[in-house]
Length: 417
Image (cartoon, rainbow, N blue to C red):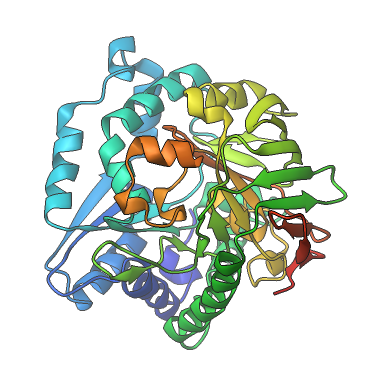
């Protein structure tokens, strides 16, 4: 029997982490509704977050529980009709929360064996049906109409995957330590640390947005040689963002990325992933992608090839990019030298791409643009949104101006501006 979480991590550390999610993550306002999405296995920490939300002034906190083993049973035994159908009540309750201006905190983890026997096709069908039904909600997330935050919570299965040489309790305790450190949550004043972190983001975003490079060229010794064309009037975001009411928040904890949307038709070259892609509990390893005119024309994976194929067949936009992100390999998270097998963490240790949908917020004055105008500007549209890390410690990134002049943006995996 694994010890309780409070025996592995101090209560003070858990409170700081929960408070970080509430005050910096979604920036809960007085008398605001808060919705916490969590698997039941994280009930102890979820209650810390719930209490932190009330202490921040939340009017009510809805605990939206899930159970991964029940979900597994659904995928294995539900009728085909049920796999392709998402009931209206799921959309209706989110609509009601949105009308109440809710903030959403998603506690996420990894479980590698739970969905191992699920057919990739069956999983992909339900995910497509779910995202189609809740497309308006995801659009609000992308356009920052709602405030939301992803927060990782270690589990035994995840910990033993990351630290296979340690006993279960030691692995879980070690993963908590690394997660808290990578999330800048283990200092004396985490809120202040995040405010300083955000100031560095603002400086770099201002530089990139003022320069308006026509393309970014990524090269490393692993085989990546990728040119990513940028749309006119693109916007780099990162760190904190601001919702449509002017309230700042951090969608991801941790976050180390400065990201924008590529032009969907102007990506060419080869990308070699340096971290596994974890999607729906499946680990897709050693991914290689080849691009021409913005589209993935060939792909391979040493493990999880079928899952990768299903992912790229989600819809027409699933073979184009919606995001490009610059990440230093010298951040506290990257310097843990840990392979997390978790997209939120691994993508924040290395430069990465986002396959699928682009965020309109990565284009200037996007709120005034129609869907057709966004498409004509070069932004990709898809139900899919999944990231692939390809950064390395020898990564070189060159910004190419419209006239051809070049500026080194990253050298040896670190920012040069």
